[in-house]
Length: 116
Image (tube, rainbow, N blue to C red; front, top):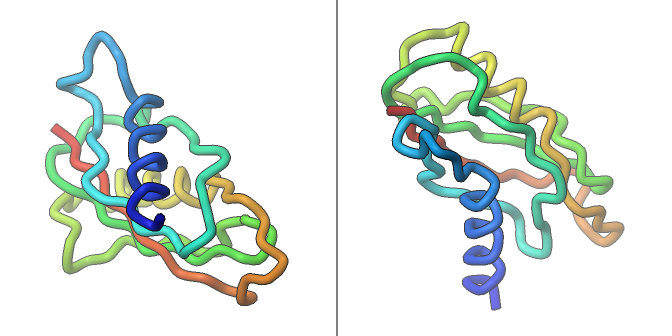
């Protein structure tokens, strides 16, 4: 069941990034969301600028599905442009997840984008 949910989320995220210039757009490397959660709104990251490499973000969401923190994972991030990384962090902060009244007050997840 978890694999099916993860596959559906990944497919939805990829479908939202399709463009004529697909080879220039960031590619989702991985998405790890807490069990029972799904992304309900994801802002576009196609307009953030140009960078080459990977930006990995660790995030925390609350019961209402709001991202309350998003921080670049320095071990897995290869992009060195701090301004660009900050823009990706802000985009992740704007993401929304489904509400879960049975969830813990804070739940952690992570994702990574590959920019070419």
